Length: 352
Image (cartoon, rainbow, N blue to C red):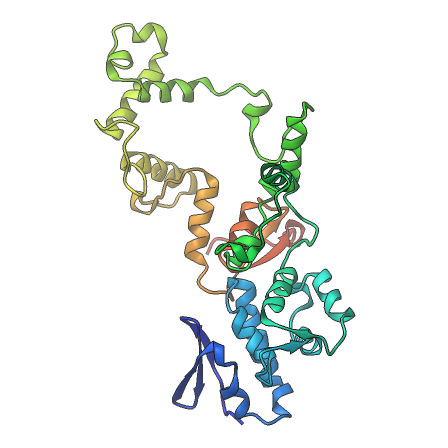
């Protein structure tokens, strides 16, 4: 029996470690090396269960390792597995990780049924689907209308399909623009009146924009001779708007608003942000540590991309949550840990 097995999937190969000696086996050959060194009793042991669990965690987090997981279930290296072997596997993974419909399929199937790798891959897609009934019906209707009576192509006809695509992206749900919004768009197309409350979009429901911001931006975009340097500017724009627009144009530089800026944002704007934070928080903020982003969603994605290092990382988010949190956490292959604000009613914070 192997004294210790550590494995990682790298460049499509299963790497095994026994003591100090490394052995690499091609995935297409199955798992002969592993199981030739284990007794029949050990093949159903906690060691194999642990390997299956670790491989499953990797698949759930990254969407990769499907072939390796199949090999770990195929204990006799026959190239096929049975529903019974999947049932044993289900006993060793978290029930919450498996879609209930996929779990039911396993439990109701004949134990001796033969499962090839393509069939196992299809089952994995069901098993990791967040909601078995969730479909983009509006998009599907448009797609069907576009192909008419022509038969729908099989997934195998396309190199990029639901099997080969990023499984993290497939599982990602962004409720702000999800099934409910898609259905609302379909109803709006039929002439029905829809009030969209899925995102903070006040102008869409009639709120007037703040005039000051629009005027400053207009003067930043306008050529100087038609804007801040025009002799009639004082009669068209308030003095504070003109003053602020001149400051911003100087910060932006002669290239104007259509040019690329520093990756972190324009320095003078970052200085304004740093000064604001310093006054508000009574703690020095440095412009070099300020990153300006194209909206909150882009900033959240940047932060989470930097925080999440591997598939064992978890991010705590408040419930109810801004849906971009769970969407990006899923896409980056981490775990979401929700907490309710009521859990912290009796928690106090003290400054050290």
